[in-house]
Length: 261
Image 1 (cartoon, helix red, strand yellow):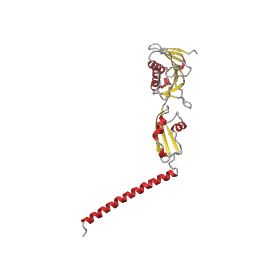
Image 2 (cartoon, helix red, strand yellow):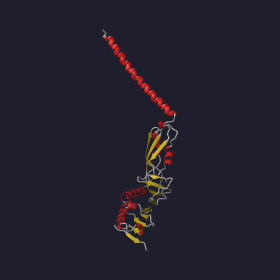
Image 3 (cartoon, rainbow, N blue to C red):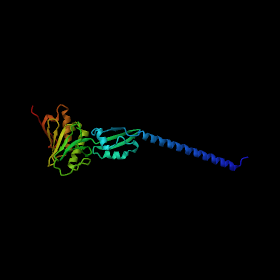
Image 4 (cartoon, rainbow, N blue to C red):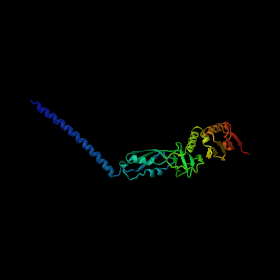
């Protein structure tokens, strides 16, 4: 008859053997993973081959690659995604960026661009987005007409891409242009230029025929709303450019002079 002490020893040995076997299996599995990874690195399986960019319309794919500065022969595992994202988001046109790996050899770059809504004619010509962020002129044409804010060519304030418009009056006009784009896009598409005079009055020019619309010093937003209602009353039969000029400087009325035939 076996003694209880012998039975306990056998139980301990059996459990020790099981633990040792588990440790051995885990170790072998780890070595296999390490070996596989080393082998893949050796045969360059994880070297970046493809870089997919999405969401960029103003910046070209080549622009994105130059900003991201990713070497094609770099191992995908050694790439710091946060650093690439930071480099991308320092560009004024890039509002946000996300970079991800797609094994074995692809990097995906998702871009959210700032969309310009108008130009500012300062000492240089700049673009501005809906938030009032200054943007440089892109390397290729935008392919669309945007209103120009003028009258601030001699503004002493400094305008820098990637920063907000420093002049409050200019920023107010940008906000009004944004509201016009959202609420009355037909009127927005008619605007070629909004010129601000030193006395605070504004004059708007249409894209077609350059018809002047005198807006005076009253609230610009209210005057553009009145102009939008006037445009709606035309019901597509006439355009703002069919007039020689429109004068909104008088309260609750528009003085219009038709073009002579």
